[in-house]
Image (tube, rainbow over all chains, first blue to last red; front, side, top):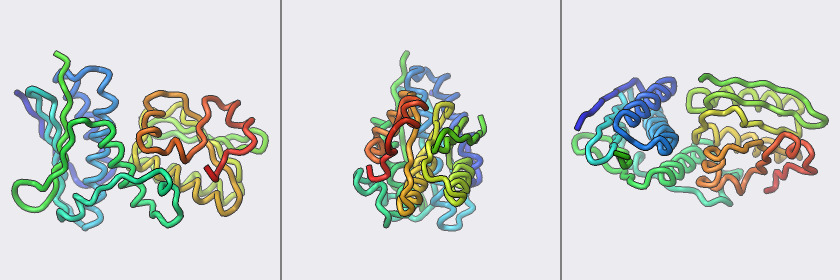
Length: 144
Length: 118
C-alpha cells in the first residue's frame, strides 16, 4: 500500500490542485479510466465543502486530503469545522432546487451532497477520530 | 484549464459560451457575467456548456441563481449540453428537471420558450 498526503490553506484556488493530485494518484493506483471523471468530481466536491466550512467558521486550519491504495483507492478529506455543521448534509428534492427561499449556499451544499452520494458508491461522512472535524471517506475499486 | 466566457447575440437570445473549468474558484466570475447580462437587459439567456471540462456544485448553484434572477422579470434561461458526463451531473442532482437542456445551439435558439417555469 502507498499513500499521498496533501494539505492546503482553505482557499477555493487550491481545490483544483487537490483534484489534479487526487486523479493523478488514482490513475497511478489503477483506478479504471472510466471512473476518473467521477473521482475528480467527488474529490472536488469534498474539498470545496471543507473549504466552505472552514471559511464559514473563520478557521485557518489546513484542509487535509489523504489518498491511499490498498484493496481499493481511498481518499479521505478532513476538515476541522464543528461536527454539527459537517454532518448537516441533505440532498434536495427537485421541486425545492429552484425555490426562491432557498439560499445559494444551501443549494450548493445540497447539490454537492447529491453529487457525492451519486458518484461515490462507497462513501462515509463521520466525525474525525481525534479533535474537532469531519472526515469524508470515499473509495473506488482498482482495475488490476 | 481556466474559465473562458464569450457572449454573442443570436436573434433575441443572448448566448454565453463557457469553456474550461467551472468550480468553487472560477464560478464567481460566471456569476458576475450572468448578473451583468441580466442587469444589462438580457431576457433570453442561453448558456452553452459545450466547451466545459468540469462543472461542480458551485457552478450549478450559479446557473440556478441566474434562472431565479430571470424569473421575476419574465425572462427565459436555457442550457446547451450534449456531453454525457455533464448530463449525468444534471440527472443526479435532479437539475435536469429544473433547466431546459438543449443538445444544440439551433435547438436552444429556436425554442419558443426556454421555460423558466420548468
